[in-house]
Length: 61
Image 1 (cartoon, rainbow, N blue to C red):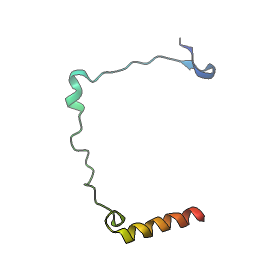
Image 2 (spheres, rainbow, N blue to C red; image 1 turned 180 degrees about the horizontal axis):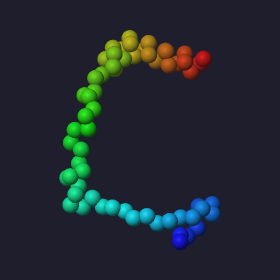
Image 3 (cartoon, one colour; image 1 turned 180 degrees about the vertical axis):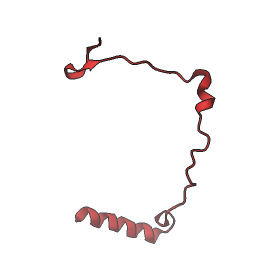
């Protein structure tokens, strides 16, 4: 069967499939995710400071 692996569990070798010629067939050009929209805290320094304080308070609770 297999050889002994980590902590006495049995280890079985598996097969590995290489992409080869089929690589373009499986490529994902558009995964369907919406475009990134910046958060308010990314653009406004006041909002960033407020978000930082909120996270700090949550850690204190």
